[in-house]
Length: 320
Image (cartoon, rainbow, N blue to C red; front, side, top):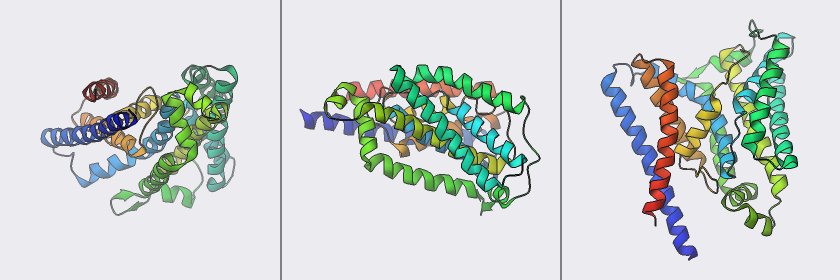
């Protein structure tokens, strides 16, 4: 029986891997045929830079979805962290030290989400429906709804805008973070516990998994990735807006599910999530090059999420 379940799981993982690769190749072929600029060095360089923030946030969302949860406050945490960094830099703090404050802000917000979820016994998606507005409100209050710019000259920003060849330096940083995260997700006990909780939380409790502790840790990790992504974003953009990060939660969740993770939890792959990020970014970029409005880009993300869930259902039926 166990072997049969293992074979089904293996089939689903392989199918999701193939489907995301097929999807990426298909959209690349389509946009290469309908636009003259898609496969240019300049556009590929732009694509890789655009992926950086989503690579980091979606990596963290892989942890959350593996438990069967969703965090919809990630965009607000990202933006709050970036604005706090901007405010501190504008006040004279060295940007490198301010970046530590940004990561700590993300950690604190994620910790708050985790504590509330664990204490109240309510699903994270409901808790974060509330905290997303708290974090947005805090950002608007201390920035007076104004953007933060004219930040000091620093090698922090020089690094963020630099490139190694045609590829942005921050992309290499993001790739290193993703590689470490993928190894940790596959090999750490805490992540095995996350997946056990997503598969069957009652069985996880009976098997000795400290579920309440893991809930807090899971959402704190998500906050950490939001803070980390805000550091890379600010180093490149060089300014902070009071309402940035809107819709990032949808992009992250879509990437995780498109990458093969079960929306109900129990599995997931950081590299699969990266495949989802590539697919989403290519689609949005291609639609932009075709001259379509951002509204169609948002619609495409929604269609992709529904399609990814449909593929999951079909693969499960095919597996028996």
